[in-house]
Length: 264
Image (cartoon, rainbow, N blue to C red; front, top):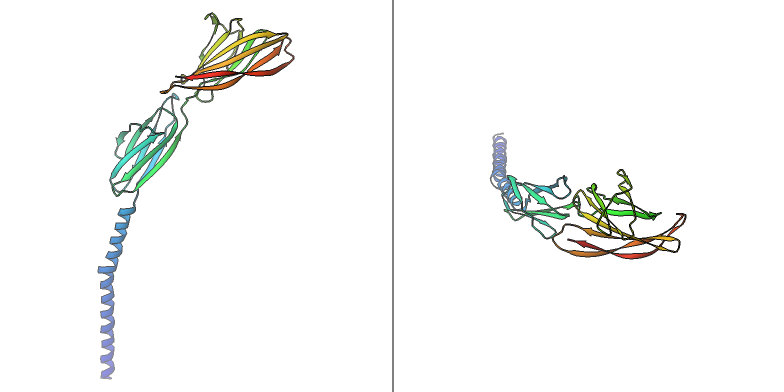
């Protein structure tokens, strides 16, 4: 009886000693190891979170983007690139930057944390109007040239449209439709020159001449485009030469002419 009681107490002391040893190991070795290495892993691998947002444009000439950074660590570097150029950023507040934009392209923003982790985000800029208006649907009938000016972005500045004859005298349109940007002019024997701009200031010049070949009244047209740019370039497009019968019952396309676009 006495031996049984002694054996029970011994087992209890052994169990209590084992439990205390495991608790001591857990609290002072295992948990600190897990916490330390977890914190170390967090410090080494945490990358910044960024937001790159493009604002709307008011004049189709400029806009701006906003870069916002969220990070637990100090920022080592911030860089932006727009098709090989580095726009100047303005820091509005801590971890927030404004980026001015004056041309279309791909805007790239890269942020590097002090721990060396980085993140890059891209946004496509295509809301600025860098293309001039187009002169379309031109045709001649009974000596009257009718044409339509179109622009898909900023829109046509209708008040900018004017025409000159071959002597440099202004030609007043005989018919105007502002809803469709369509105008009609009396054809001058020395030529007709029509100028139009969009609301971003890009300009197009249409040159028109006519001649008779038998009973066919033929209209030749070319377009010269002026766009503001840092570099000068020249491109060529083709335009049609339209034949129209005097009674306007038959028309066909008979050829093409070369048009030179000069970008200043």
